[in-house]
Image (cartoon, rainbow over all chains, first blue to last red; front, side):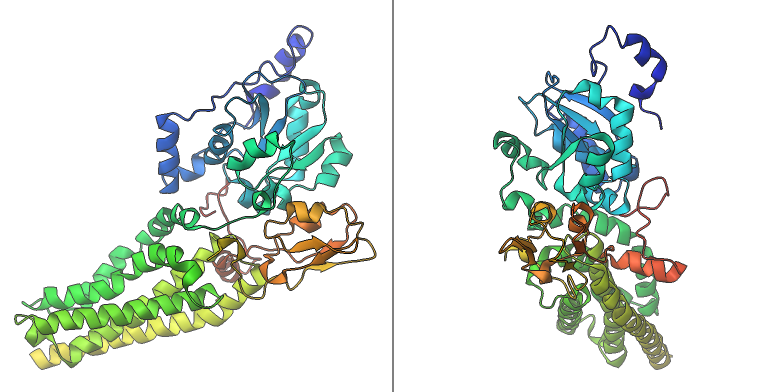
Length: 364
Length: 102
């Protein structure tokens, strides 16, 4: 994609008459309803990978040659988080082409990187727009941008701004300096909560398969089928909200360091609790009395053995959304955990067949 | 529960500082999102290795090239992807590759 600012012919023609940077679009610091709606949709995975702004130079307020330059990614959720913090501030925003990915992930991939920054500075003619040679970068971009290389190649000094855009006003008013909290990444409950829609959406595609499994395991389709099916569904389909929503929210309080271990604790609590709960409900219901028995217990065990690895996998998968995991540890989790998950899944399916055969045989 | 001190397993094993090269400029403190490092006796030191996620920001920005760390994504999906495809761990996210994740 070619940003509008890079068209060389008119730029050259206007050079003598137009002030450098005058063609940079001005952006509002207040988000409108469509920004909020688009951001909400992106959180749910709707047009998420296509939620972008055009890379290039933007203006906030009435910036001049001495105004600060803030560098950010072209994921619109990121761009909006930056501009909404700049009310009453005159500044330039330099948007890098990160393919619609946020700063930290893009820095990890190298798209929020040294090369892209140097090229974007050249393409936008930033050196003519501002008289100073300082760029404020988000701290989490440091994984991708090497400040000494930027300095050597184009003379701009990188000032590492705060982790969060919401700290930009405080950072600027403190003479571009950071406190320890400003440079520390947190993973509070609301940080985790906003990630759960994506966790749920990504796992949702497996729900129909789970429902089909439950329906089959609860066969035959007699009067007690709804009782069995709902009991199995509670245990098995429950894995979806337990792994996708409850796990992220309970993360700091679950014991252990490995996400799989934390997930195992939560998963065991869920399958045991849900199995006992549904068995108690069935036992208390006269109509379903006939449904309780060896095959019913077998069905709950089978559902548990399938549900458990699903919860543990969703828990392990949350490493990718978290802010503090490393590759060595995650590899250990995969190598030790995945074989156990597959074994549990296999045992669960086997138990599902056995309980079905038992029930059909006793009914025949 | 302070969410800024959540620790994972096998953290920061590869992080090392060469005291011969370190000039105590403190850029590493400035870019570390987990407050792993500190300056003591004119030397950058590893204070909280258990919080290091090996993101590589310090290594990437050390002007004296005094820091080394083996970087990588701490993402189970990326590692499983890598094992299935026989490649290095890749989250295959976004961009124009058509994948979807971070």
